[in-house]
Amino acid sequence: MALSMTTTTVHGLTATDAYHRVEHVVIASKSQIEFAVMSYASTGNPMAFGAKTMRCGYDMDGANPIRQAYLYLKTLPEFSNAVDC
Image 1 (cartoon, one colour):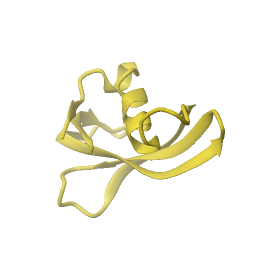
Image 2 (spheres, rainbow, N blue to C red):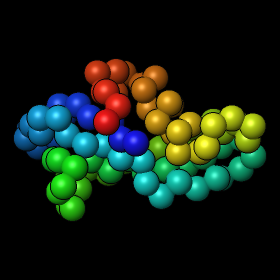
Image 3 (cartoon, rainbow, N blue to C red):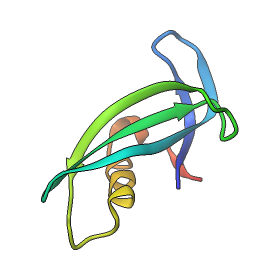
Image 4 (cartoon, rainbow, N blue to C red):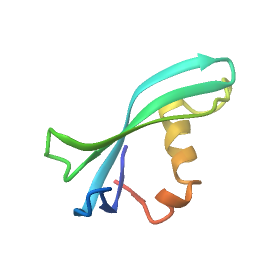
């Protein structure tokens, strides 16, 4: 699972249909997970152009932690135009 959306970097470069993937998920506590969102120009590009560490709530009885991270991302304004890929 990943998210796709056009993204403009802080340096003004635009990546059309950039690929955003949740990586390095850590269960920080019974109620929190921490993860990195890595951004790639495309699915086949091995070098990320962006990385952001995030934290969100975690439901131990809910979906797997990776799915919960993606569901959280989709609630944020910066990922509002993202589509599953």
